[in-house]
Length: 478
Ligand code: FAD
Ligand code: NAD
Image 1 (cartoon, rainbow, N blue to C red):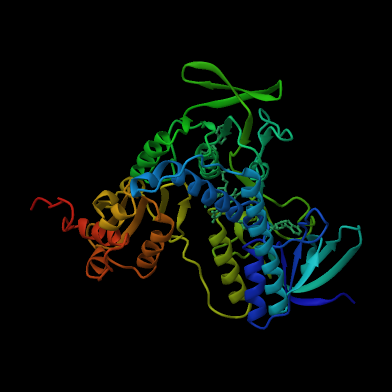
Image 2: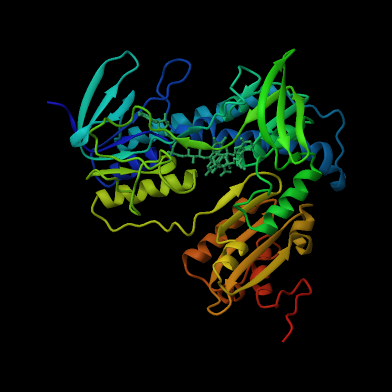
């Protein structure tokens, strides 16, 4: 008889490993199947996020930010440094060390919580049976009371730019470039394109970003997109909108990129090209024909608001289901599903999921954009406060950007918080907390924020919603 678990999770990314730990904490006998192996053939937990996503990209962004500041921004403090150099191999090795520490950390957490790791490729069979094919080809089948599919996503490849070792790279290859390229092309001005473009632009690479759409960051609030475009351009990122790549050619170890824009056929030649045009759900080999789980027309696993699939007792979470492809969204769905399986009431608030782009300054938002609310005919009040008017931001020499708060004109409830700023990734949680607690702009206005902090910009933006910000001229006409 095959071993039976209360919960089997397939996939150990931030969706799956968090779900497994939570389920085990709740007293459920839990296993997690993972197929990812390192160069030594050992199973690696953590998924895209820890191995080739959130964490390694932020490690590179931090290193290059420090380099850039030392070279260009610290003189204003009276700090001078000559002949500043960057050892790119050391930077990449540091990134790899962080990844190694974090992924082994998850192995430790599984052990500490009693989660069984099943190494290999997981497949859901009918009747909540899970088949695991190990690297040596041996097959085991396990029974589960509940199954959580957390198989994540893979980069989208496009026919005009087929991946080519060392030259045309996806996000994984992009994280392992170990020499500063003279020129870099990026297809897609989305999150990965802007973050990876920033990494190399800071090291002196001439970066050209080709974006198919005519508008920049269409998902962001228009003010954030406008400010972001202006600041990134100032940093040397050449973002070409309305540019559709039609082909590539390798010539003398370089990449010729052909694209079409409003003026006609164009081409550029770059040392390396990163393809960052989005990600797609990873479901190949995951489901037996009779598993009972359905995919939608775009290949995502179909789920309801509680992440239940069409098969009873089978749930799916994270990048392989609808919603934003974000690690924290995947993890929160994992927690919700584990709680539901354990018999608790649980739900996730899909209206309050923060988004962050880790450029410098960072762009971050939560809730609805001004354009969305206007389209929906919602009457709104908007308050905006620039970091240029913040004493602490001046002291830090980080005065670019602003905080924008949108509130309902009638109820005063906060509907969206949007910002561009050096530490927007940290500040945005204040917006998320406010929205989660159904705060009004007045609630934020009446709070005492510590001085001098960059957070005061959130307070001032809330005050500006009613024309009461103290440190800018914003009196509303009566
Ligand atoms: P994944 O992390 O993709 O994990 C899925 C796991 O399932 C993988 O380990 C895979 O090997 C395994 N698997 C799949 N199928 C099977 C199978 N059949 N059997 C066994 N195992 C299987 N998000 C953020 O929130 N913040 C960021 O800063 C951020 N930065 C990013 C930067 C980059 C370069 C990239 C590529 C992504 C970034 N993301 C970021 C997105 C984030 O990585 C994903 O949203 C997140 O990893 C999704 O988690 P997941 O658990 O759903 O899937
Ligand atoms: P994305 O969806 O953010 O951006 C892709 C961009 O490529 C879009 O602007 C799109 O219009 C453009 N595009 C698509 N096809 C094109 C083509 N043929 N030619 C030119 N442009 C084209 O996708 P991404 O940057 O690849 O990131 C993938 C996912 O990973 C995102 O959903 C994101 O949520 C997640 N991620 C998050 C973070 C973060 O939270 N900071 C960082 C990196 C990635």
